[in-house]
Amino acid sequence: MTTVYVFPGQGSQRKGMGAPLFEAFPELTAQADDILGYSLKDLCLNDSANQLIDTRYTQPALFVVNALTYLHKLRQDSTRPAYVVGHSLGEYNALFAAGVFDFATGVQLVHKRGELMAQAPSGSMAAVLNCPAATVQQILQEHHLEGIDVATSMRPPNWCWPVYATISTGRKHCLTLTTSSTSPLTSAPLSILATCKRPWKSSDVSCRPSPSRRR
Image 1: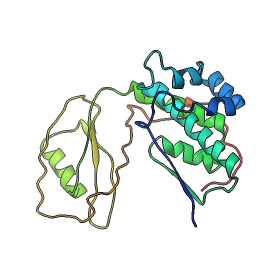
Image 2 (image 1 turned 135 degrees about the vertical axis):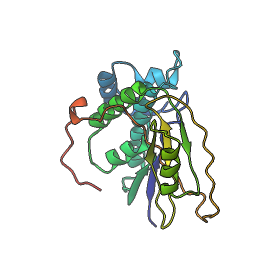
Image 3 (image 1 turned 30 degrees about the horizontal axis):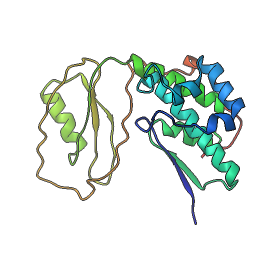
């Protein structure tokens, strides 16, 4: 039997998450607190300031709870999974589980990631289904919608599922995309990426990847 661990992203957070884990891993919890400058246990269990909905706090909290959950699982069964995958933020937990970087580096990375995403100007996102990428680009050009960017796309043999965001202008546009073709792959998953106004640089975060294998 092949074992696969899947780590969730933002949206899976809830008050009370990780309750038994902080006491089970006191050293790692203290390490995360030192990096972040606040108590993760208090944030996750009490959230008195309603900060779990703020991406600056959501991302470190979820990373730590995901990571500690994984380590707790290994305590129960030391057999490591054959594959690790993650959705959005969960990808960082998959990288941690794969040995790409250590716990402290992961906390630093998602802390900076949350700060950068919080700085992005207001806008909106939308998923376009069953429409070729070339058609989407053509419609954007015809309507002079330079403020809309294609953030990512899924690429089956003949179709893609672009995600576009009104990030740079903050304006909202409603487009009607018409296509006479259909695709049987209508339930393909989407990976929505955050778009920042400036490129991320390695100097933005202090990290020391541990010498270990990559996936």
